[in-house]
Length: 218
Image 1 (tube, one colour):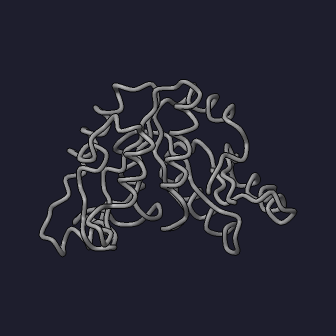
Image 2: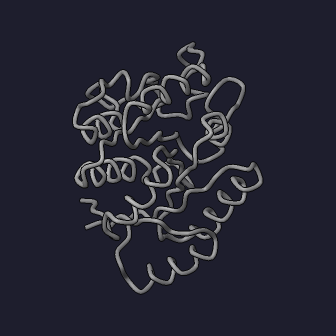
């Protein structure tokens, strides 16, 4: 079970400054959807009309659903149809560029972006979750999450976790964002336990970028 580690106030302060944010991560399976859903639930519990989107999703489950889409749909309290949460749903558990190629689908990142921004405009706060790490290729042209963030013109949260290799992966991700002129809203530390090692990692990560929130795992 995942619960907020640092309380709701840091999020409320963050979304007062940036009502709409992109969620990326230092790697795939780093906890972007866990973070997205935890933020949505925390904001909604605090009285903020917030929703999340994952416009591109790949890797269908055995039951024919997409787990990330279902998780965000539930966190949204069903306010948005699944087809709006994730308009592009791909079968293979690959980066969207490769999964779309397998299915003969052309991903129109401009159209996907316009639809996502139009949807979020109807809510007090909103999140757009990316796919994989910052430079994972999304379409046939090889555009990445970094390119997508630039197109959306949104600040981005970077999800990381206190495990071996995190400092390097986080520093690389943040450096690429800064080189490209992208706005970093802060780091979210997933799978926080509060251990001495985690506190040590937190201190090191703070040298890279502000850690604005954490999610605790039980």
